[in-house]
Amino acid sequence: MRGLDFVAFDVETANSRRGSVCAIGVAVVRDGRIAGTHSWLCRPPEPLDHFEPHNIAIHGITPDHVAGEPSFRHRLGEALDVIGDQPVVAHNAAFDTAAVREGCDAEGLMWPTLRYGCTLVWSRRELKGLANHRLPTVAEALDVPLERHHEAAADAEVCAGILVKLAGQRGIRTVEDFATATGTRLGFVGTDTWQGCRTVSGGRGGGGGFREELTVPTVNTAADPDHPLCGGVVVVTGSLSVSRQRVWDLAAECGATPNKDVTKRSTHLVVGDGFTGDLSAGFTTGKVAKALRRREKGQRLEILTEEEFTALVTGQRKPSVPGVDPSASM
Image 1: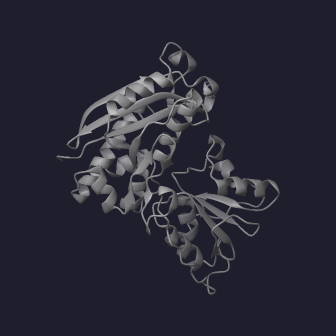
Image 2 (image 1 turned 180 degrees about the horizontal axis):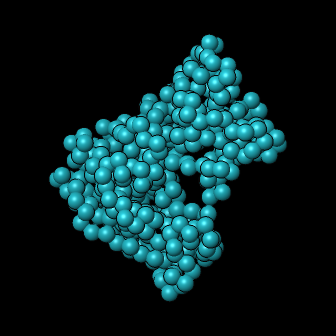
Image 3 (image 1 turned 45 degrees about the horizontal axis):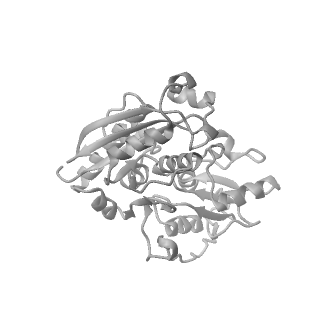
């Protein structure tokens, strides 16, 4: 597939802090084919360098494995030399790019300049009907071999294979054209700014982002009163695989009232940007922070991933049990 050139990227972390990078992997794609892979272990930035058992159980990397390895600063430089000016692609790029930014902050480095796409965002748009859109599930659906999950270079190679398959299905030859065809835009990291890979809707707004002009839908007064969203107030934060207007419309159809911000009336907060439900990993936005403060004060407010919201809408997921933190089992 001549012209499909990019570098897939993946990181593994030592603990729940995203910047605690202990491994970096890349897969270089030229003309739609894997041209090479690179895998580096590194010592996480010193303020974030402790290893937690949960993370070790996932990827098998221990403090002894990285003790004699170069620092994150050094390994990131090697990865950036390989990337050059090519677009970067990751599966759940919101996590991997946040890891780079936080790691740079911990090391006192300027953020690198990257254009990036997200195969999690794109697979949600292109592959309907999957139970979830995690890397193993998407790889299996597209017949992309996955042999060493959570080895950074292996995961980067699988991510690369996913984009090659998705682009091939559309007959598209560049990452930029694929983003346009799927109604998304590439994310960007710069010296002091970043924006996510997300759905493009509406015109360009302030701060270099895209502002989606929302129309408040009419709440369905004939909705099933037993539906878990009926009578609720739904708020959205972050980028999703569908437009925010679509989420508002679905909520209203179920009898809920969409709202732009978290208030004392809010009952559900839908979180995008690849959020998987793990609030312990330092994942936060202004609205998430507000929601957590209100929950601490006793307000019942459920924080949902995009997939959990979809499952509630379709009746495939029951609401959380009263008094139980919905994030605890995610």
